[in-house]
Amino acid sequence: MRTVERALGVFDCFTQARPTLPLQEIVRRTGLAKSTTFRLVASLVDSGYLLRLENQQYCLSFKFTRLAGLVQGTLSIRDVARPVMLELSRVTGETVTLNEVEGRQRICLDVVHVMSPLMSVTKAGTQSPLADGATARVLMAHLPEPGRAAAITYAARVARFRREDLVKDLELARKRGWAVTHGERVLGLTAVSAPIGDSEGGWPWCITIAGPTIRLQSRERDLVRHACRAATRISRQMGASDA
Image (cartoon, rainbow, N blue to C red; front, side):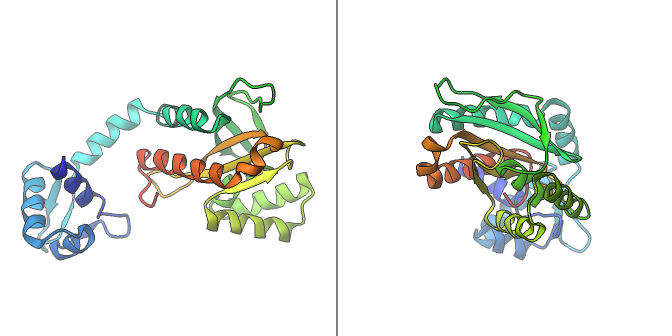
């Protein structure tokens, strides 16, 4: 088990910014002894997972491309997120949704409901304007430009926000890695949302805990922690490098 963890640690050393690394840098990033790292790297080269280049640096092999193709052909974000959503709903006792952005809309891809006299009712496939609420905040905050600027203009007009205030809110949501709103989209409803990353460096999805403000507001800190942990788990499984 320890060897497997060390091998995974070597793979995690490589990033889009540093796709090739010398042995000494792999040693530094893994924190392993040089002799241990050398044996591990040599074994990974022999098994075809790493390549040793002419300049004596190492990189991931095309074996990962084949494996990635198998994953992409069989798994979707729903498949990956569903077990995490079920656990998150069980732990918090609240409704959990998986959401993505498409144009000026946010789409609920999946939902786990809880049975309660007071509950958030959302259906998978529901589309709403990308304007207000914690889900919209998180999705907009992580949009690449120029789409982000256009989305801000749209949201400010539709939800009647001051553009300057919305920009500040989105900057804060991006910095924190989460957003919380109380009664902004639906009166009496609180939402806690955290972004989910992908293998290409984007953040196209988010996970949201939603429920009545009277029940959620006093638990805000714990709910933020649970949402962020769940989002990080899904992001890692989707291949996000900085999750």
